[in-house]
Structure formats: C-alpha cells, structure tokens
Length: 402
Image 1 (cartoon, one colour):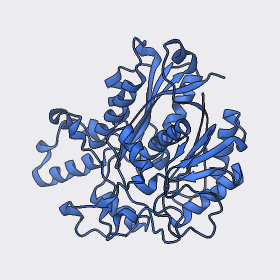
Image 2: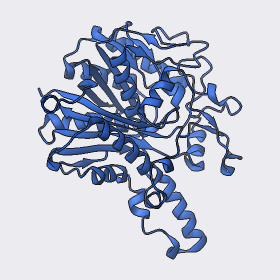
Image 3: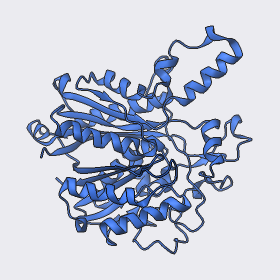
Image 4: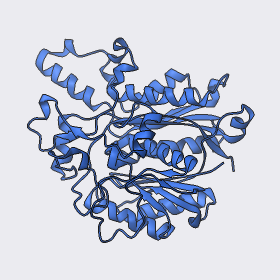
C-alpha cells in the first residue's frame, strides 16, 4: 500500500491566526469563546460564539474579499499557509489535487444577497453571488489558487466534512490519481439564522454570561456546543515523493475509517463511530493498543460526548488519553476535523497533549483519562482524531510517527 505523509499544515481559528499561534494557545488552555457584540445578536437566545482570532482582512486584500464568501477567505488562508509550509516546487499540476469542504457553505452570502434582493430588487444582487454561495466554492478557489488539475473535490458531511476531505485525499494518492493533495475544510456561519436554528434544536450552550466556560466536554454541567468559525488544511503527499525532495514530514496518515449510521438525521448511533475507528485500525495496520491519544469529537452535548466515550472504549480500550480541543475553539463545524487533525499531528510530533478546559465535574460515565489543567506529556506512536456529523457521518483519522 502507498504510504502517505503530511508535509504541510495551515489554520486560522478562534485561538490563533495561524498554526503556530493556534497550537501555542491550545497548549496554554486559552478559550476563543466570547460574547457576540453585533447588533443582530441582542435578541437571540444564544449570544456567544468562537469568532476568529485574526480577521481575514489582515491577509486578504479588501478588493478580493468582495468576491469571496467569508468561508472561501478562510479556506485560502489555511491552504496558502499549508502550501508554503510544505515547500512544494516544480510539481506537475496534473499530479496536484484538492479535497476541501464546508459543512454549510456560503450561507452568509445567500442570506445577505436575499436581503438585498428584497430591499432593493434584482439589479442590486452581486454578480459574484453564485460563486460565493456555492458549497464547492472554497475547494474551487483553493484549486485555482494552487493550479490543481488532478481533481478538486468538495465533500459536504456536516461536522465530519474536513475529516472526510482528508480521507478522500488519502484515497486519491493511494489510487495513483495524485502525488500531492491539499485537504481540509472551512466554516464561517456565525449569523443569526444558523445560531437561531441550532438554538431551537437545544444544541447550543446558553451560558451567555460566562462564554469562556460554555464549551465543557464531558462535564456534568455541559449544555450544548459553542458555534465557531475557522479553517484547517493539510498537505498530503506520497511518502516517496516527499522523501525525494527532502521534505519535512510531520506524520504519516496511516489510515482512515468512514462509516454512516443509517439511523437518524441528528441523533448519533455509537456503533457507527465504533465501526469507523475499527476501520481506521484495519486500514492502517495499527494495533488498538498502540493508539495512545484520541482528539475526540466531544462537542459538549449531553448525549454525544458519552456515546463517543463508549465507542472509544469499545474499539480501543481504556488506555488512550483523551482531549477535546473544542473546549477552547468551540465547534468549527465543517472545519473541525482538519483543525483537530492538525492538533493531533502536533501532539504526536511534540509529545504534548493539549488540555481539555472547563472539565470541572466529570460525568460519572467518563471512564477514560482526559488531559486537563496543563499539557500532558506522552510518548506517542499513534494518535486518532474523530469527527462525527449530522446525518450519521463518521470519520476516524489515524496518524503515526514516520
């Protein structure tokens, strides 16, 4: 089987405008959650979110911003950082692919242009509306930016989107369709309608008076997730191709598992997650006993958190050390899997597991060790990153040392 490695990483998140600052703040236990100060948030039942630490306008010129939905801007920021980090030069464009997704896409563009249509008429709708709102827009712009011609793909699987994009990238390289794939995802829908919709489902935390403690995976007092925004990108590369050019390698993407529940549109079935983890183990050839750390999906919802713990215990055992970086970033929806994959890779590489913050009173059913307080030192050979999405999408990514 073709070995695939990670040679570049990029991100923009609620705790940092790039990978270095994001990683530093994750290790320091910094929360990116804060109050929503926009006028439109005043009457919402939920008035907190995890907004970006660095405005995209600092990296994308204003003239270009007008042609890009916010999600597309974030995709380009993360992908460009990852591409520069990888240092790929002279690659045949027909051997470069992109797999980049968004769970919701250009919803803010759609809603803003609809408001304009109703207020001022059709002539005032932007000619850039369709390219800005289409769900494949982020992937398309990344492909155009890098000149990718081996295929540009845009999976959409809710909160599992960017993890699935990474798994697709792995498949592309293994199938011989590409030597290098830029994979990841983005999301930028901090807007009254998505917030109101999630709030109506009772999915969001209502800790409006204490935003930084609102995201509290596995805590008895958790009451829902915190919506966030961001993007993450990985450069995946055929191992022998990376070696031939002397590339710096972060980790090996040893395997991936993708399953579906076939159960409910929002309620998870733990069996789907169990099958995804076991599939990743089989795909990688890694024994469950070698997986020392799991960056859990753990969104801070009453049902989902403990269902995942059951799945990890069943598929791996009781030895892995868990963390949930969502306790700091909030839930980045379609970008979550890629950002958490980056955190998993850096934990593997540096032997440091970021802490889970706000875990003050652990759930009685939490039988696994969770890193809290400060970064946990650990000698890791293999790590797992889980992502689960509405609709019953389950993805587990398994990374190993090179």
